[in-house]
Image (cartoon, rainbow, N blue to C red; front, side, top):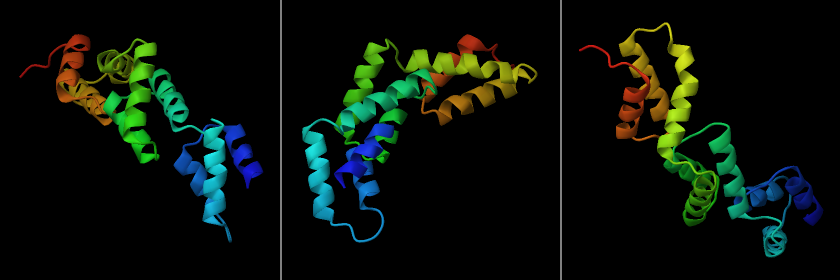
Length: 154
């Protein structure tokens, strides 16, 4: 069981919950053995929800930017405790020197070339929807759209 856990962790970081689920799959698995293996790995810092959350957040900031609250929510959905998720997101945002405004503008600038042939109102609507699906709040969306697009008439 320990070897299987180490093989899983060698491929990528896992949350404690995720690792427990993977180790418990298939057949007659003693839950107490799974718990003891995970406890041992956690004591040795081979599995860490904080490290997982930090790596996940860093990828999200660099590769597919989303709002802070959305990243925290995604981490909680993956089994990271809310306090740990918020701590990791705060640390990564601080280390990377970004906030939701920076990320929303970055997302908008990447998305704008797809909208060049659309009328102004459609560009606003599509960009706002795109930003909203990434968890940014409405006031920020409005401000970013106003910065990067001409205001539609009417």
